[in-house]
Amino acid sequence: MEKAYAMRTEQDVAFEEFVEWYGEVEYADPYDFQDLGGDTFYFFVKYKDKGEDERKYGVKMVIGDDRLNTIMTEEFMGEEVTFRESNAFSVKRGDYIYLIIEKNGEERIIDEGDRSEQAAARGFGTSFRNLRFSTNGRYLLYTISDYEYTSGCVYDMEQEKTIGKFVGADVSDNFGILPWEDYLYVCVGAGFGEGIPGEVYSLPNMKKVFDASDEGGREYPGTNCEYNENDNSVVFSLGGSFIPESPAPKEVRYYLENDYGKYRTMMFGFLSELYPDSDVRNEGGQGNDYNILKVIDSPYSDDKAILFAFYQGGYPIGMFVAKEGKVATYKILQGDWNHQYIDKVLWENKNTISYDRVVVDEGGESRKGEMLILE
Image: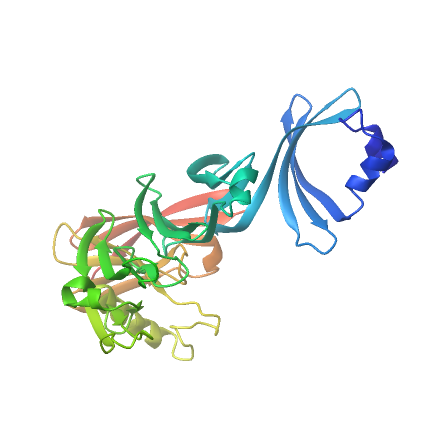
């Protein structure tokens, strides 16, 4: 404590007061120091007061005249989520909280809100929570809340903008993007407002393709919705309210206009034959699930090359060709799937597909061109 006091920046504070400032500190552990040059450093601190939860801070300091001068302090708020090279997190800087996406060392602020003492005194103060990336990482979903105000939001990483904001929605419940990233669904109970009985939007253009209000949904004060993989539909359960005059509950389905379910059935068919002793829908009992990533149409026929991963959010480790409703051929990378993937898939002609096999190790990435031939 004496050494810290000697390096203090507040010169007019007595030692006793200085000790009192930090008397309730259980620990303050700095880590991951980054030299920014010019005697300036950035580092993280795990900080905990007695009887309080641990907090995480980022600190920028400059060393001069045998003293540490703090240039900036920021507090990380809530969870951090990662998809490959992208990280999403919220951080409080001064009186504002920012929702940030960091990729390859570059930050992009995608949303912000007031977290000042004045806002807290009124019972307000923005927070971001329930952050999550969609299956293939194109979209970030999150909930923004302030007092009684809550909205579910969708940010498009490719367009670099928020494409959807639904008042009353919460990303943790009744809100989602389907595994193929081509549709979004949402529903909101009436609560203090009208609510959203149920809506489905096509992505990335956010065109509304279904509204449960057209099925009489506005009569229902409560709702629930979820994706049903078995029949490739979004199921809206309307009703179930405690209000006596509410109509009887009913179920409304919207069947999606894509071939996702069909291709999954084809994929699981040949994977089950390849791995008869394994449940390919739940590999190893860890909730992993082979997942379709992308469909590449052939310019020479109606055939399609379909890339898939070992789990949601994973890199493509295999592909198969759908021809006349059947699997014509397939390719699955051999070896450690965590350190290799398929990239740059191209139809060269009617019977030949070229692709790069990418291997990742401590030295970086190496690529090798390979071919998949249709017999």
